[in-house]
Image: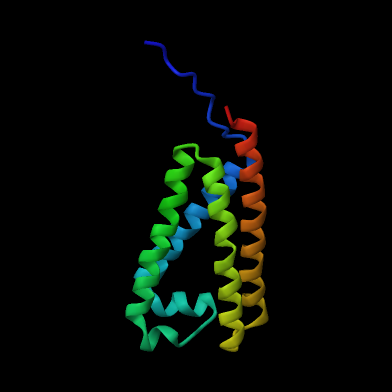
Length: 137
């Protein structure tokens, strides 16, 4: 029985580090939403929403945790193409968040932060898809 050669994990790839940061931030967001829903919602850009909807913030937290675990697993499995497409599709979320915050009268700086996250995800997606092509057998 012959072993299938496995290339070394690309720890020097910026794409890998960008994904690791995304995972860390999503875990942090989930923890913040579980631990302090009102403070989390204010930081998100829609203050007051947690007072009437704390259960919804908890639902958001569980989804944020899921959104952290999926890329963590894909990264561990070296599924860079799938991870790249996941990041590309995920760009929709911070754009929708920016629109929601803007509609709720949130500050321009928080709207800009959500749009910066969308740009971050787009760059990450491009780098991951390029990495997938480089590491394809």
